[in-house]
Length: 137
Image 1: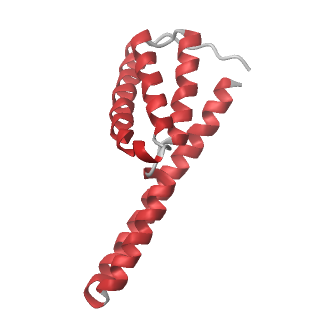
Image 2 (image 1 turned 60 degrees about the vertical axis):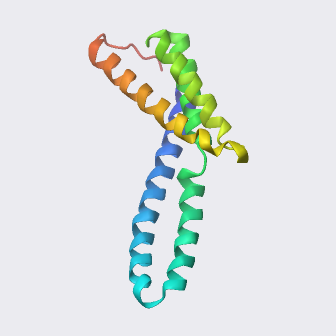
């Protein structure tokens, strides 16, 4: 159940990130096209683009925080990852969840840096430990 829940939130988070990136790419092109001929309209489109992309993937890290929290819980239960890495994961998850509070958006950078440290740590751990994992279904 924990693995399935984690996969669902990972998929949602990935989809939101891709959607945000694609909308940004298309929107930036539209803003650039409008900038020379209709600068006021370009500003309005840019503002709208910013709201949409932040709403999808940049304004808060709720979905990412939930996913990382679920993975951290799984890591603590299975002890497959080093304890320090699970602690980084828990802190990162809590910080991600806090980004939904309007006055705490600045902690998004902490979430991003914690995620990078965690991803690198997981990657290095998985590359070092080549023991096959037995899955149950």
